Figure: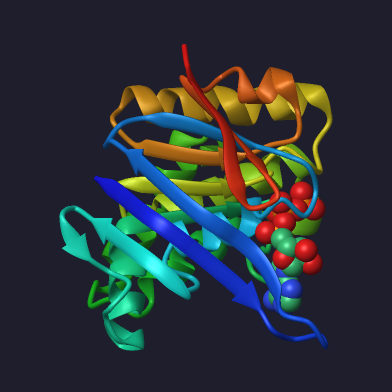
Length: 224
Ligand SMILES: Nc1ncnc2c1ncn2[C@@H]1O[C@H](COP(=O)(O)OP(=O)(O)OP(=O)(O)O)[C@@H](O)[C@H]1O
Ligand SMILES: [Mg+2]
């Protein structure tokens, strides 16, 4: 499903360009559960942003479902991103003044679904992460783990094939982290492809494959 060949990425904000990804070739099949580990600054988030079509390559190729995505224009890239990927970040990125339900509805407001159907799907997504009874709560009235579950419901609501999660348990205690990983394991069992960055070994162990980055290259790629 995902084929990255010779991927390179530079940043040129400072005086010297930084070579962040230095030739990454990576194949990921549909339905895998992959953890990405590696030291701070090794390029994990940069790689995730490229995989999720949030950012583009400077060199190399990216094929998604046998189709080149590194050569498409911005609006085409956005379409692919919205259809194909759901994103979960370390900071839950919920809108504070909106209820859980409204937060989960957000990815659908650009679609053509009528309001009633949007609400129905948002409710189902919240139910799926065990928050069916918290629809009207604003983020401030939810625990960190619950807020992250709302963020997962939001990522699921357009039924993406791939979940991209960058340190999804990084702000949670170990109990809440386990709850999040149980949800990811269920989603994986239901056929979603999950690609997750983590610094924690117990969290990485939920995946079937662990990729380690070091200085912008793949240092290790292990399957269970
Ligand atoms: N937008 C940017 N502009 C300039 N440099 C950047 C940008 N984003 C990342 N970098 C640099 O690229 C390198 C890799 O960053 P990246 O965020 O991918 O690392 P990471 O492995 O996710 O680290 P962490 O574990 O701390 O999240 C770092 O040296 C960082 O400073
Ligand atoms: Mg990062």
